[in-house]
Amino acid sequence: MFETLSDRLQGIFDNLGRSGKLTEKDVDTVMREVRVALLEADVALPVVKDFVRRVRDRSIGAEVIKSLKPGQMVVKIVHEELIATLGDSAPLSFSGSVKPHVIMLVGLQGSGKTTTAAKLAIHLRKDGRAPFLVAADVYRPAAVDQVITLAKQISVPYYEEGTKARPADICVNGVKAAREANAAVVILDTAGRLQIDDNLMNELAEIKKRTNPAEVLLVADSMTGQEAVNIAQGFNTRVGITGLILTKIDGDARGGAAISMRSVTNVPIKFLGTGEKLDGFEVFYPDRLASRILGMGDVLSLIEKAEEAFDEQEALKLQKKLMENQFTLQDFLEQLQKIKKMGPFSQILGMIPGMDRLRGQINQEEAEKRLRRVEAIINSMTANERNNPKLLNASRRRRIAMGSGTQVRDVNDVLKQFRDMQTLMSQLRKGRFPNIPGLPGLR
Figure 1 (spheres, helix red, strand yellow):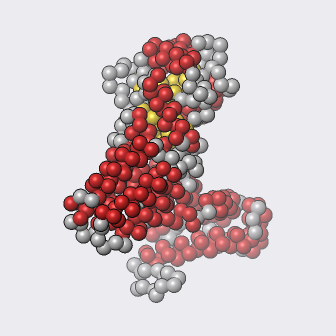
Figure 2 (tube, rainbow, N blue to C red):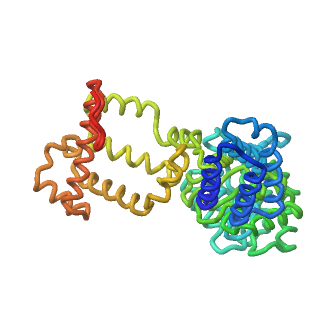
Figure 3 (cartoon, rainbow, N blue to C red):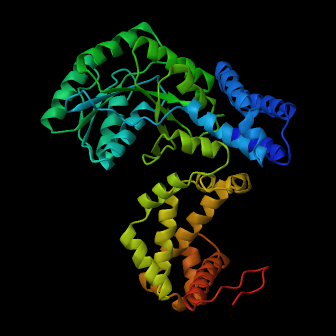
């Protein structure tokens, strides 16, 4: 979502880095460009003015003038002030409430509230808390059915009374059912509207009064840009919210909402929805997001994604197989599938320091198409063929190509990649550096 803003800021700071000395005029020029970049990204004007003022005041001060690399010092200041604008990370707070703790999700229709309820349930379960879903949206067609479907899909207990009962009564009864089921946290999926109105706010206020939630989280669609900030202000004024969940953060929105919301509402962002799939959900860390925006990567998030996708014991077994030259096509397939679980390639590249600029050079659709082709080819092999690729003669390759809907040359390409990997590991096992095309071989 922040690619355009990130590219603009990186271009500005590249030019700044070429300057040996930094004058007040240089700082003013850079700040004008930063101001335009932030406004183009839909950051609220008051937030932009305050941000630029703070950065400028620090950039023309002694800490930059005395620095050996003033350009880098300005980037450091921008990074720190961006973190300050995004606010501190704020985990869910259950202090002062009794079990089951109630989390009330609010928001307009189309913000992804119901899907977010399921994602939050998965997150809570990973955190060792037993979640419970309550379907309290009686107005949107099929909203109750969606909660039931998602709850069954993720194996989480739920409560519903159809669409005839009053939402506040459903929520009260749902909390009671959760208590009887020994649930730790109840997630209330409340109704939304196409716009903020009195009926909606009165209904939410009644639910809040009768269920006494530990958290009231606004689910806001980041694709709505500047309007998302106005929506957050409206809900906070009328109902009182304790946190924000920004959805569709992986879309093509310009990102200003995420930067503006904390500052304008004084309410912390707690989670980001990073995709349509139920695993597309992450805790909000302002320092990590600031680093991504400035092209510095996000190694901690990358490590967390890798830890979720790869089991430590399996990794050790794989390492042993690689070093003993026992790595098979079945292992190859399983590793590809785990890499896919980590997220889109462009997102992964954005987390690696220095690799952010390569995102624009990668065709995400083509990369995913190639992965699917490799999967189809290996899946068209017998178990014996996967474990012993030497069996794959010409007739078997033709059969695999037909079975996977590909060409024989595609099958040959996959086998060549596999052989290259085996050769690489064999050379490393023998303590030698492999030959790299275009570079002299190292021994």
